[in-house]
Image (cartoon, rainbow, N blue to C red):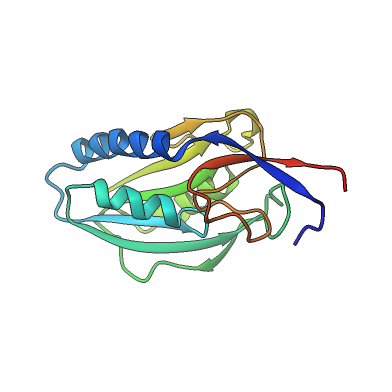
Length: 180
């Protein structure tokens, strides 16, 4: 955990997030209309708040599963080495799958997970990210749906942490380090 003092400046309000999720859910409903069951795969840990709010807005039969990856640890920047810490419990072959990511930064995590999941032959595989930082992209990847495009800022809140802190904020905020 960092011992550098910091403050958090609100960047995206809880109200704006809720409104955007409602609109995204409508697009997802249209894309997966008629599905027998949508497997919603959250990338832990940062996506858990987003996935909970998103699935409550989906008028579809859903099953929720998770993949846990690690590429940050307690750092502010990705190590670019993606490790799978927890894999899916269920089989996705021939199924409709929506991967839910908190933030697409360099793109390495999402690219790695999509390669893994595509090898399991889902019927349809789509992606959604709450936040997108295209200025930091290194992998050739773009989510099918984006909640908000943001500049190159280190953010926390709404499930996203800094050294396991601030996940419980109801909004997205920028981290600003202060003098001690």
